[in-house]
Image 1: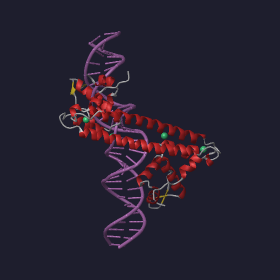
Image 2: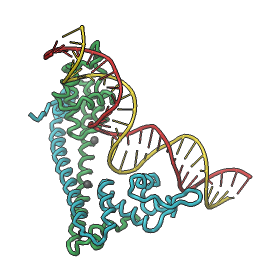
Image 3: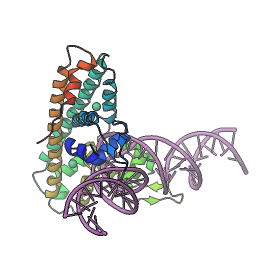
Image 4: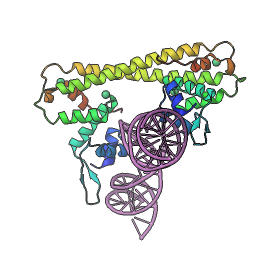
Length: 134
Length: 134
DNA sequence: ATTTGACCCTATACCAAGTATAGACTTTAT
DNA sequence: ATAAAGTCTATACTTGGTATAGGGTCAAAT
Ligand SMILES: [Zn+2]
Ligand SMILES: [Zn+2]
Ligand SMILES: [Zn+2]
Ligand SMILES: [Zn+2]
């Protein structure tokens, strides 16, 4: 298969596939005489795996670790669990952070209701307040 | 005040302040004879405003619009409201997305419990599944 | 008077995870 | 034979900074 085909199948762009190759997520593929990349079914499956990981917002490095671990199928999958659990923790922390931001923003939005002029806008005066950790 | 002072006061790094200047969030300040930047109290307050906006995860462009609007204090603050509300929408959407990701990741994490070998790991086999929008 | 140290200056490169060109080459279709 | 579509490499751009390198400035200590 040529690069455009696996791009179509997976929904990754051609540039993204070449980018993953540069980053080491995909091995250097064989080439045709005309220097076109040629992919095997296995590489296509690996790209699908990568796509699923990215869809779960895993970093290139996390995906690297997972791909690496797939090369030792007889070993314990504890490391896989560790990566996923840590990633879930990251996402949970981000959700908490965004919920706090949203609450603060909503509070600000509610502080604009009366005068409706820029100079009196509660939103802008809220944003002027310093909020330094002592 | 010199740049290091307002960096200390606001908690922005010196590089970040220079970065904001390049991005147009802060005007070109006056300089000493030795070419050091000199800041007024007003600029310090503007930097605090910017910091508060960034703490609410607003983009440089959104902050630009807010700073611009502050220059027409007699005008209606509808545009300010629009920016904040749109930003709240962005954050809400992101929260939804992360909640969905987290649910999917938790489901995956639960699928690893039995064999504890890489080749049988439910997490990895989940990630192998293609999930293409038809 | 000079040297040290702390600060400041510009310019440039780097990070993630791609996206978007330019300019050339290969292959396919008409 | 030519045009269109696909591919190639290399490079620049995105966001919000961070981290250097290689200088210049300024105050205090020697
Ligand atoms: Zn992660
Ligand atoms: Zn208002
Ligand atoms: Zn926003
Ligand atoms: Zn497992």
